[in-house]
Image (cartoon, rainbow, N blue to C red):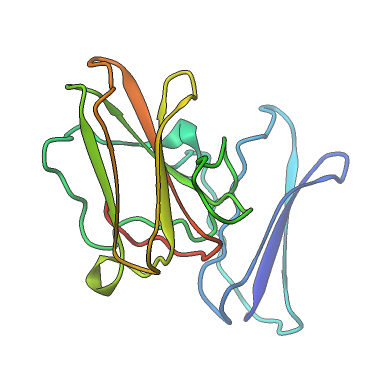
Length: 189
C-alpha cells in the first residue's frame, strides 16, 4: 500500500481521530486520549487510490504526544538526549500552545521533571545531526498548567533556549515542544 490513511470511530459512527500520509510509504500514526474504557471503537484503513498490503500496530500505552505520557527527565544536571531522539511527527493537539509560539496548529510533545533547584535551562537543538525539525519552540509549565516560560525560534534551525530561575524545588514541571507547522522533531532536549 502507498499513501495510507486511517481513522478511529466510536460506536455512534462519530470520527474520534484521523491521520494521513506525509510520504508515499512509511508509518502513519493516530493517537487519542479521549476513549471511554469499556466502549467499542473501530479503526478504518484506506489508501489514496493505491491499494496494497500493510501492517497494523496498536497499543494502549500513552506516550509523550500527550502531557499524561510526558517523558520523565530524571536527571536535569547537564543531561542531553541522543541526537535526533524525539519527534513530533504525527503529534496531536494537547493542552495549551505557548504564549510566544507562532503558528495556529498545536502538535506538541511533552517532557516532565521534578525541580531540584530554582533554576532550569532547556535547549532544543535541530539541524545537522541534532534533528530535522524546523522552527522549534518550547514552553515551561507548572503543575497548575500555568506557563512559567516560553521560547521560540530566531532561525529555521539551530538552538532555542528557555531559562527560568523561578522554580520551586520539589515541584513538578512540564516542557512542551512544538514546531511552527512543520511536522518533524528530531531534536534533543
